[in-house]
Length: 275
Length: 275
Image (tube, rainbow over all chains, first blue to last red; front, side, top):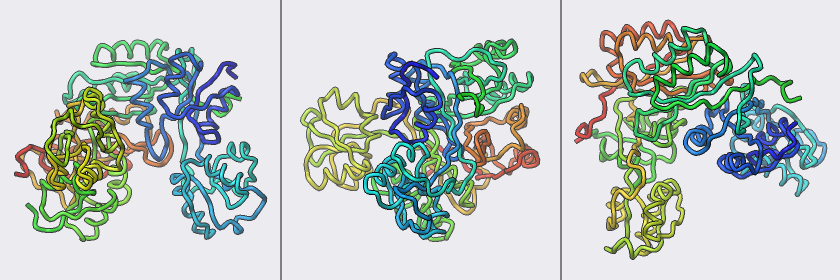
């Protein structure tokens, strides 16, 4: 556990809060991804936790764009949180007593079949945390939210994992001024742009990894903001930037790209990493 | 000009409306990307026009996901529209007479330096078209909007191209039940998933194109919704799916991917294509 202040994307009781709670007890909630990053860059907080991709919705564009264009921060850790939705109420009750449920539109959408099956009417709130707060204050109806929200607002958990899709995970990154040392089971995040959009440009870059049997766990592109067809690529690879083979490849890559930035090396997430 | 009804993403007076106006005079406005696609699939409209990527904001995820998961439509054309913002008012006036301006948050953000330079206060509306409508109705203040909106609401164009970034373009696709025949200057959009996330998986696919000197104009990934690290790739390549060399590569690709879908072949956009 880090002793210093750690920034996260609020409000309290969300999945971001769950992820951040793994890292520190001394958390400060910020209202945007960019204000979390600014808090770390200014030294207000020693680390910051933001979402970077979700297995259903895809990349969090604001996180990727801000890491490239606006901040010079390193990824020190990754945290993967399953997005499990729970039915929460102010008192013990059975699912079939619930008539109305409150939550964020995305959570309601992901639990739609469950709500239909139980004849529950859905109502929108701005966040899952706002729904839990409402139920705690009124003592009525139910909310779809995190176990963190149940704990925070002293709600009963009526049912767990009520979402339709069981492959729903969000990956968060812990941002710091430095990345992590070699642990032997590491991942490295890099970003780059090609010199020109010639046939085989990305192919040549990928060949550097393929020839050395380096596994790529993510490849993503974002517009470079210089017009259609101009991209910044984001690649996650297995290994540490200081490993001998990877260090050589990254030097080669830097020579063969018009823009190159290492976002950091960090241990591959395991459930027991923060316990 | 197509004689039949063509669906576009409304409201009227937006950049989507500008793009759709190039294709037909007989336009029907729909309130979501998915309802545009549904209108084409059901035969209510013969074609539909939706945005697919912007040079600053990146891909339109809902368009990509819907083309894969929910609809079986083909791309018949692409249309690229420069996102130029204009200052519109109900009467002729100089920029320095304008004190208040209304528009969508994205347009206001892109024109921020201009507004600061002229001491103009920004107010939010739900769309650029809603801002133009407001100015037309009240006869007061100014709106940031399209030339289409000026025409539609009979507004004076006080100033043009007031945005900061001059690389701002949006690419639209014309969806139909069939794609286009060979013209000699074509592009093909495909999507696929790899069998497994082994080292060099994407590299091997890209090698098929590189070895044949086929230029890729876009590469994008979206989550396959099967968990982190599982992707559907979107590639745009130069050439037609019925060209001899490309037809062979696509057959090879189909054999070497777990999911494969051709989204369509269509002429590369030129300004004179719809005139």
